[in-house]
Length: 127
Ligand SMILES: [Zn+2]
Image (cartoon, rainbow, N blue to C red; front, side):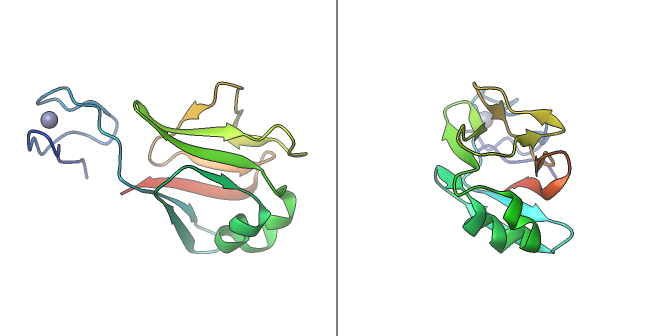
């Protein structure tokens, strides 16, 4: 796959790099999606969003009930896209099987978000 730099047009940056190999610009995807492979659904985001059970229901179906009203936040920053656990949520939010630290986790395409160890599994996809 890879991505094309909007600044210099360099076309073969790999998905693993966020910095353009042509000009050094940090590439922030314009939108990103959460995908449930079990429910076969995707939800796309463009702006900072707090995800809770109502939104998660649209992606994972029945597992939504393990989420709180405010479960985690997706945030777009200068250096990339990040996920933060919402402190008031009862169940932990995990990213790639690790508890999300207070400073958040940077998301990468293919990363897996779960509630608890394996519930409400969502895969991260960048546009
Ligand atoms: Zn570039």
